[in-house]
Length: 482
Image (cartoon, rainbow, N blue to C red; front, side):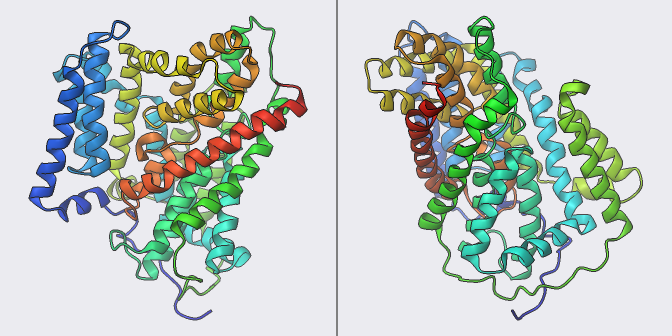
């Protein structure tokens, strides 16, 4: 390998991509896209309100139509659209002002805030470059081999660690490499797009693999336990046997579909030279110790009873109090816009629950699956879970769908256990950037647009749902679950 070692750019960690993309659009294009979004929203609002939908829910669906189009087209900066979500729900009397704005700072959003800050810390102290050195030393610089190992590694790590944590570590490790190669955000280079989109997709594809992978997993089991009045209990090991093998398959499938749909022309990371970063400095060691202790405390969640945001707060104290990194530097390099977008997504999701809009969608779609084949039924249930998870948190999607699908499953002669265990899988596959923290984190790097993400995410989601449905029909029966 030849060339110079890419260096970490002090001012190039995060590119305000949504702003720059909007600046490249003509005024006419912005007006047309915005007008289309508003007109479609008005059309939805003008439709008669169904009997099983509240007026507030009807107005929310109209607002949601406009917001999604604005987000996808990036007609205006996505941060402004995200703020309009809160303001719009108050303006149109959908929810109260506290219900509109409080979700922007709820526990999940604050956790994402600190997880993204972890990435800034990793880069500032040099650990991101060190991680990249060892990854390249193991996987090499050949694009095909490196991307395959990266995809499988992200998926398997996400079965144990939070998928947002996995994403932020890998994204912040790769961005300086691409910057050192002269592949800057917003320039349209396919190579960094391929890797930066691959990372969150691979991480999301593994979050259901064990009970440690995400809150939706134990939530689904708790709902099943309550529904069965304690008759159905799934242990940690039993859940792992059921779900983990599927995560291995989704890892391979994620890499394969990205490779087919978004394969870069480059065969190798040109100009990247392995160069030992030297002995670890004191601040690197300190940050690494804090990271390890944070993971330990996360694993002890059942004992401490703490929300995952609490260890994250303690970690931030551990990073900044000794002076290993300044909080001002973290704030200066933090992608605030993308974080606000995630807050808006949570606010929308909670409003869908509060106004009954989510229940209306479920009651409208799920009955269409009655009297269908087992394949169509399970695939349809999974697709609906994926759709909702693209608009709200996956835990909220599980909480919304299972109380409806579990009674339906018994009426249709299906196993409630099967339906419950399918929920955390299907809600792992999202089709919009706003769907989960990993995609928001990757999007904040500035290397891809929402349209580019959707072009890959939709077929990726449909393929992984197919794999999941086949697992339900052929693998789970071997275990006695269907």
